[in-house]
Every structure is written in structure tokens, then in C-alpha cells.
Length: 124
Ligand SMILES: [Zn+2]
Ligand SMILES: [Zn+2]
Image 1 (cartoon, helix red, strand yellow):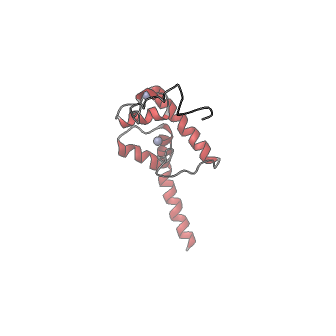
Image 2 (cartoon, rainbow, N blue to C red; image 1 turned 135 degrees about the horizontal axis):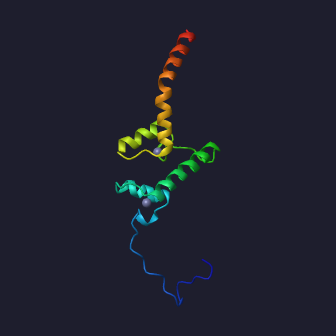
């Protein structure tokens, strides 16, 4: 704010702009753009899908490095079966990380159940 003087300034402060819409479709190719598509119940365009995939990738990498703490209400649990189920509940196409997690979950489910039962029996 250096040099900014209210009184006596020749420049008038800019008139207040009308409140911008919270979600702007023009943000295509970004995570926000992807969210906007979801919000308007549209199929996300390819740039947005790409951005969303990159966002997931980066997010998960950062979470792995401990830079961010994943929180259920902030993250859609993407990349997990729970995340997949959330996509399904919302009626939107699951993103790639979620799809991968879901197929892993389904394929490993029976095997895991058997292993858990075995572990319980040996624990007795
Ligand atoms: Zn888009
Ligand atoms: Zn997802």
C-alpha cells in the first residue's frame, strides 16, 4: 500500500465490481473448472478432466510427502474405494484414481476377506 493516499489522491478508488460468480466456467483446464462442470451437472471437457487428473496426482503426492493432511471433508477420498462410491452417489463419472482404486478393491476384496478370517482364527 506504499504511496496510496485516500485524501487528496487524484485517482479515485475503483468502483466496486459486482460480486463475481463463485464458479466460473471460463476456468476450464483447472481443478476449479472441473468442479464447475460437476456443479452444473455437465460432462467435464477434456482439459478439465486432464486438470483434475493432474490435481489428484499432485495432491496424493503431496499427501504422501506429508505436506498436507488429507481431511475427509476437504478431499473426496479420491483414489480410494470410498472416493469411488462418492462419485457414484453423486451420479458423476469416477475419476481415474478412483476407478483404479475401485477395481483393485473389488479384485482384492475376496482374497482379503479370506486372509482376515484366517488371521482371526490363528489369533485365537
Ligand atoms: Zn471444462
Ligand atoms: Zn475421484
